[in-house]
Structure formats: C-alpha cells, structure tokens
Image 1 (cartoon, rainbow, N blue to C red):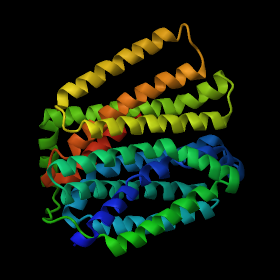
Image 2 (image 1 turned 180 degrees about the vertical axis):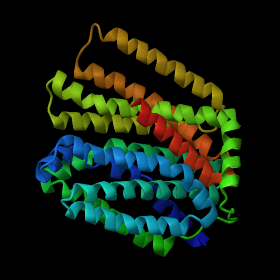
Image 3 (image 1 turned 90 degrees about the vertical axis):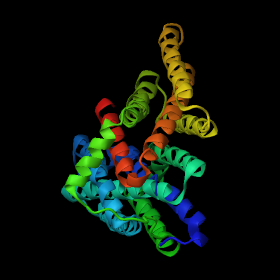
Length: 354
C-alpha cells in the first residue's frame, strides 16, 4: 500500500504517467514521411499505425476501469510501464510493418490501462477540495501532451531519425517504472468483484445520470475542437499561407499553452458555481467563433488565425477541464470505471468528429 511518506512523490509520478498516451500518439507524427521512406511503404500504411493506436486506446478504457477497480492500480501500472519499454524498443528496431502494427495496438491498450489507473489514483488518495484541485491539474497535464508532443518529435526527427522517438519513449517508460516501483504503492482500499453483470449495472447507472452523460459529451466536443485544428492547421499554415514546418510547430506549441491556460483558469475558478461559469464560457466561445468567421472576410493572415485560435483554445481548455474533473469525481466509489468511461467516450467522440 502507498505510505503517507511517499504520497507527494507518488502524486508527481502519477502526473508523469498521465501524458504517456498523448506522447505515444503524437510524438512521431513529424517522422511519418521518413518512416514511409525508410520502410519503403506508402504513407497510408504508416498513418494506419496511428489509427490502430487510437482505436485500441479508446476501446480499452471502457473495460480498463472495471479491471483496475478489481485488481488495483499499482500492479497494473507497473506491468503497463514494463511492457511499454519492450514494445517501444521493438517498434524502433523492427522493419516489419505488421510487427509495428501489433506493437502500436499493444501500446494503445497499455496506455488505456495506465491512464485509467492514474486517474483513479487521485480519487483514491484525495478528498473534497483537495481532490478537485488535483483532478483539475491532472486534466491539464493529460490533455496538453498531444499538442506539445509533435514539437518535441520534430526536433528528434531532425537530429536522430524516426527511431529516436520510440527510444525516448522507452527510456521515459523505464524511468517511470523504476520510480513507480520504489516510491508508489496500491491506493485501492476496497476491491470490487470483477463481474460483467455488475459492470453493466455500473454503466447503466452512469449513463442514466444526465449530468455525467452531458459532461462526457462536452469533453468530447471540446477536445475534438482542438484535435480538428491539429489536423488541418498545419495544412493551412504551410500550403495556403506558405510558411515552413517550423512555423507550424511553433503555432502548435503556442496553442498548447492556450489550452493549458484554459485549464489553469478552470483550476483558479474551481470553487465558483459550476453551471454559471460553464455557460459563460460556452457563450464566450460561440461569440468568438462568430467573430472569427466575420473577421475572416477582412483579415487573412497567420496572426489573425493564431489570435482567434488562441482564445478559442483557452475557452475549450476551460470547458474540458471543468467537465472532465467533474465526471471523474462524480462516482468516487467506482473511480476506475467512471474515469475509463469518461476517457473512452471523450476519445471516441473526438476521433469521430476530428
């Protein structure tokens, strides 16, 4: 069991594990053309590696919650981190695309287990306002990973090649495994019996809670707004406006800070009445989008694009932060299932829309 002596260190480690899904998803995006060239494959074959990861990651979260609620958080996290190390090394060393496909599916599954376990960690260890505080920070840390990851990956690709992305991920996983083994521990106090019937009842109860269902929907819509820009923004900046990949990378980083800023606003206003602040953010976001459409008839520069994208990212980050924290803490006695369901639904909605 986790001891009070190492509680703070274990919390820091939990924050370090949370972005793993985003790093594993997006860090190698700038390397995809090089991977296709080196492996003598069409780009569509390399792009499929991302699709397989996303699908396995999203689906895993639906049942990972019930497993971590039954078998605990600590051992599952350790197993996931250990398998991460081997899978990333194999991905970097192999030239067989089907082996890479298998490793990406495995990495998506492991990401689902690790992230769900660490989300539940904060619900297990903290209560009341302290729980809200840490859940709010967690959503910031988790969601900013996919935005910053391509920026890091671009420099790794330029300096060391596409394999370096996976070696860095393997090294990061190994360090987390070592520190997790030394300083962390089990936080689940009462284990639930793993039962399909019980799981169906839990899901039915959660889906019937209108506030929880609406929160999952809003998380998916908010995050998909960001991912949608990630998919099309670089094409607009590079192909339509004629700027370089470096400029597109810096824009991605700036908007990553915008998302993070929205999360910090959410944390700062965590004690304010929930619905009024959410409604204000939604109306503000809608007004900014209408203003952006209107201004596009008169302004068509990278500065106007980034300015409007920045403020919209801030509002999206604010809405996501509030709803995600709310949903994860909504059912404290089933924290793993609630976290898995919230993440799975939000990710599937994001994938479908973006």
